Length: 159
Picture 1 (cartoon, helix red, strand yellow):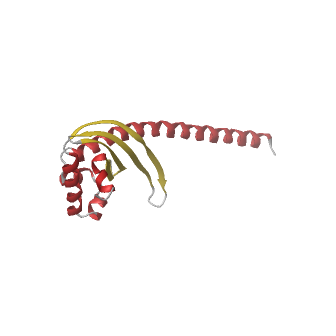
Picture 2 (picture 1 turned 45 degrees about the vertical axis):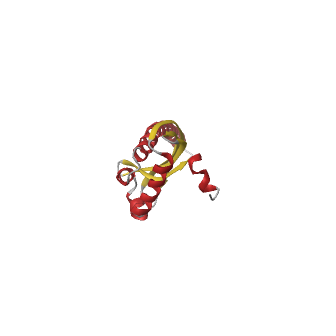
Picture 3 (picture 1 turned 120 degrees about the vertical axis):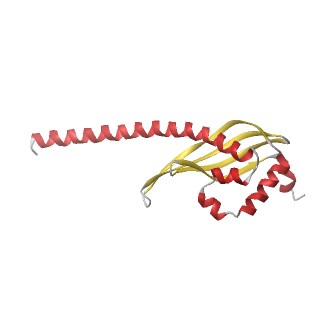
């Protein structure tokens, strides 16, 4: 093989390695910034829904597909149970969780989904708000909202 061809292939290999390293470093910092942003968004979404337990609050942050799949009457029933058993939201605390990124080849886009637990104090007790939300269309959208609290223990025991 010609000396210049070898040098060219070695140079090309080096450039490809540098490019891969650059992509890895970029992905690392992109992930860290997404985690920071999604952590703030977790607390914001948790407070928005729990602030008054209203259907309008849910619709303001819920993914449009969720709003189409779950009837408003069902959402109202769940919100009424939260309101009755938990009362008004007093404060939120630590958020724990992470953001996951995946390349959706079929849709030609990067999917970003976050799952967080947000500690919360309510008028009638404490609990953990567990939520899942996704980034699309330039906004974070709620996909799932669950409250784990001792205030619901009697329901789990069938009482």
